[in-house]
Length: 218
Image (cartoon, rainbow, N blue to C red; front, side, top):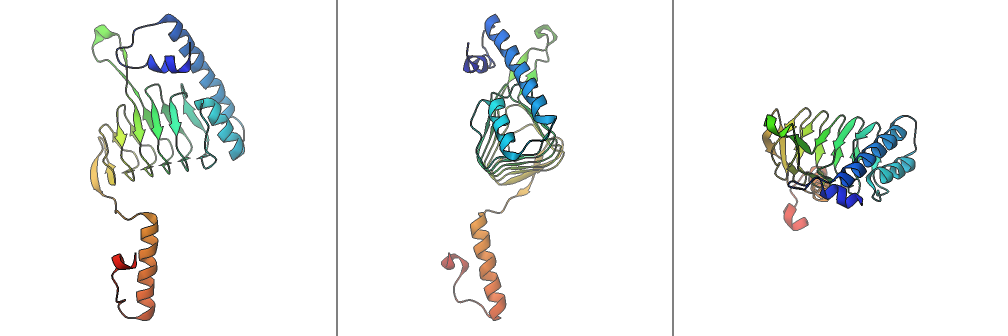
C-alpha cells in the first residue's frame, strides 16, 4: 500500500478497502505526531522546512516561511509552491488535496477544508472530497475559510473572515459570508508598478510632463 493509493481512495466513487483504510489511519497518526513536534517547541526556519517536508512527503522550497502553530490531519496531499508564507494558526484539511501557488500569503487562522459530509441521513455523514487550489500570489486574510472544491485565481484577495464557497476569479477581491466579489485587483505586475512610480517621480522632480507615455517608457 502506498500514499498515492491512499489519496486515490479519497476520490469520489472509490471502493472501500480495509487495507487502505488501515494505512490511512497510520498516516493520520503520523501527521498528529509530526504536528506535535512542529508546534510544541522552537524551530529555526530551516528546521521548519525539514519538518514540513516530512509532514507533506515533498521537498519544501528554501523560500517557504511558516509561523507555527500549523495543523493538518493528513499532510500528504498538500503541495506548496515557492516563496509561500503561512501565518500562525492555520488548518489545512487536505485529504481532498490542497495546492498553494508561488508567492501566496496565508493569514492567521485560515482554514482550507477539502471534506464535506453527506446531508442524507441514510448515508451516515459519508465523506465527500474535493480539492482546494490557491493560485499564485493569492493573499488570504485572517480567519478566512475556503470550502471544498474552490479554486482561487492568481493575484486574488480573500478578505479577513470570509467564507469562500465558490471559485474566485483571478485579480478579484472577495469578502463576506458567503464571499462575493467586491472589486478588481490592479493589473500591474510588481515591476511595472515600480517603473510607473519611478516615472511619476521623474515627472514631479522636473516639474514638467515627460514627452513619452508610460507605455513607451516600458
